[in-house]
Length: 269
Image (cartoon, rainbow, N blue to C red; front, side, top):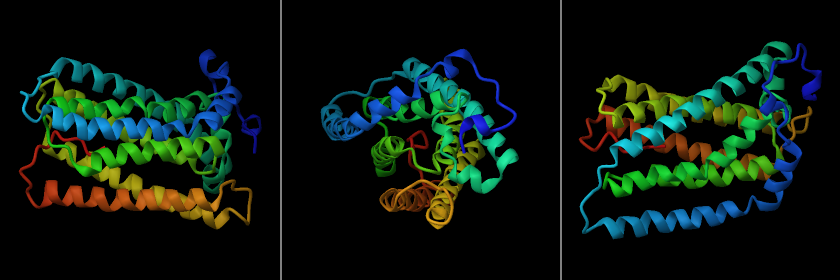
């Protein structure tokens, strides 16, 4: 189903309507493998940076961190509102199955800019780790593993514009809206109740469960109805979401249920 067939049409801003999604797709198809280069440089930063800071005093960086987290929070909130509006429209107008199998998300006037902005944002989001390293906070495996794999999978999926992308991106925008708002508040020195952090991690776990469900439905409907994807994408996506589910569940247990005394400021995502 084309975006033009969704009725009634959604109101879009000029910059969204004028965004050239065809050129964006061409660029991603030609350059998506550069994600491996970004991830290689990132891995070098993770391990090289920790070695560099081992004998050096930690930096404060509180104000830059507030600005960094706040900017990502605002970006995520706007992205969640715009993509959420599109997904809600598809759900109410065409039903749940169409929302899963929809690929107009990548080209619809309301969502096409935010779909591309989402996949590109996974590169600058690697900067989260710079603050952790320079401030000498505890850097957990889940943090850097998640950053690497979500960048690779997002760019890999966008080039094929597979079904399920609307759900994946919208959910991630929503979670990041909560997460980066929390980090901005913490960096600003505000006292955020502990249950807020628990809710955010629980929401992340729910995102992984929903991601697995969507991938399962894409695979189930892939050959019976128009649900464009491929087995390789489904398998890699399933392995990614399953690993996230396990790691986030363990993080939740260790941090909130077992009474871990680790730095709760460490970023899990």
